[in-house]
Image (cartoon, rainbow, N blue to C red):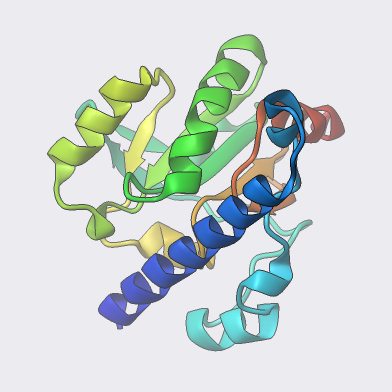
Length: 196
């Protein structure tokens, strides 16, 4: 079952990138404007009903964010409940995912310049090895916590289909926004404003 889920995540990621790439090349706007283009729509991925069939339920805006504890890339552990009282951006990603790669520099800037915790949950079971994750983090110069979802169990709790998928959690632990696809810094700031 996990292998089927991994294949589904891979296919959804490739579909998401194809759509993202097509939208980027269709717009003949200056580079600054293309970074604010809309992410892929929900129509390009499984419907909530299809997700419910494959994952056993859906997580929606307004629901409490499921708690989890994961190992971190630097050898520690971290849980969502540790962040209580602080807004949190949970980002599910993988190194092989081009849209994930595209949004990481903006996510790093967003993390450095705003009062929010960023938890980057890597779908470790889909990676070629932990060294690929370490190399990616070093290449991107990321300083926010990298959590390792080694058996994609947390991705299952959050009903992740395509990556990247991000969850904006308010200081009380409620999911306020779910974003499927890559985001830019302006989109992240806009969602953070809504959490205040």
